[in-house]
Image (cartoon, rainbow, N blue to C red):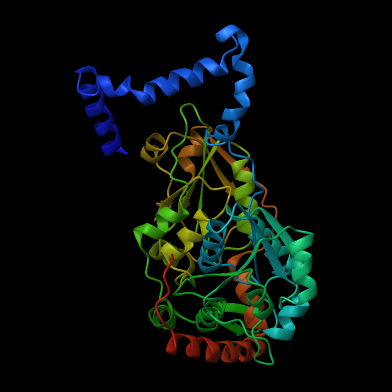
Length: 419
């Protein structure tokens, strides 16, 4: 484009310097003048108009206003049990392949038949999926297999153009491909699987971190927790991934900045709802995510998901505008000033602490900018872990089956472009 402009400027200099002057008023110039005059009704006694039809065939070469096209709608489904940043990144990639993303959440019955018992209810999984910033529409109780009947429903009722899935295989109990029909129809697109995490992996972390004793879920001890993290956390955080999840926007001048902090471990429906409530209190929601050491000191064990994993889960939420990674437990005056915080909020449901600590919200309370928000849900990270521990035999069996398929995937894994 720049070369074209330079050439245009050079030609203009030659033109008005006389080099091309005679050419401009040669045959081409005469024809252009005659064409303009013939199209005008003010020359040659008004006979120009009848000649206009001769030029009509060339009018379609003029730039036209682009016609409004129907948005490209893509569909991706999943169980979305124990929602994690891998799910979020898959949906982010799917959204890039179209204009509108429709997500199918597989029913409880289908999950039991194909994978084993789900940890989260359908309602909780719908809340998590709907809370992601890239999701435009959700279809509850979707089938695990893309059958011909359901595929036609997607195409005709929901106007789906393409069906999306990751590069990892999705097999039915009989060993067949769950997306075979979509591939055959030529309406299938593939994205890259997010490495380092899976629901199977998270269940394994929980089983190693907690133990069940006399109806109470307890931690399995710091030593085994550390061993578990070193063995099972394979996530490799990059600045690019954080940028992909981030809104990249600062609060506008005069915006009411609301601050809420927490561990946000095993990101669940309760987190989504409290973040929604906090966002409604202002114009910009700033979330502080505590680091692993701070959580360990309070609870007596490390979080299931480490700091960067929890950060991505929070960033993926549609109600969150910005995150402080490794935020301090105590809200200081410097923090309030630096981020221009107007209101500090905290929910009524929080994870228990194993130590007696000073009130981390003492300063915002003294400044009159603290508010307690009623938590819409009573679910906690520990209560989610308890569901697994209470049925540990069933989940152990489920994990052994899934781990075998995942090990096979990694053994045969090849590089796939994308992010």
